[in-house]
Length: 238
Image (tube, rainbow, N blue to C red):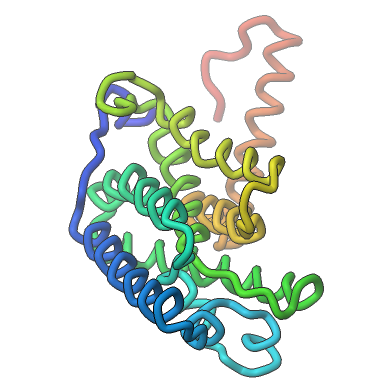
């Protein structure tokens, strides 16, 4: 399918919704630093992060939404890289979709990843808190790779790189973190965010779209098989 964005370049844009998300996350992170690091009060982390036993058994059902606005108060790189990836991938998507659609996509990816963390965490580490916007941001990464696969992005403003390759940067970062166990990152949130983002962008949440994509794939498969038998194949197909 022709990509009408294939011959353009994308810059890193600080669009309205992205700017508001960054400001909100930074302000909340500073509050965490004060309350947790200076005052020693961890209630904000316990009640606003996703803690599976509290989310599912304690009925703190707001946690899959609130966790995505918090970041580790003792790890500056957590919020730094999340906000960097948000800026890198979110601006172009918001410019393409509009702020309202971007907000909906971001929130759905974040909440969906939070629910996945709660459901899986209750079986593995029910008391472990998970916080951060990684689930929502990895949804943006999936959307960017699907929406702008051939678009040139200038990495650090200097090196041109295709969108589908650019999107590999945070994915490789997550895989390296998983392999080295360098941090307590929730890889469930990353994977869930990627899957939810891809499903939303591809329209696979609609059964009719899934059926159409399968039918198109089967049609193309039959066409390739026919061409392999009959040379170039027919000039057109009814």
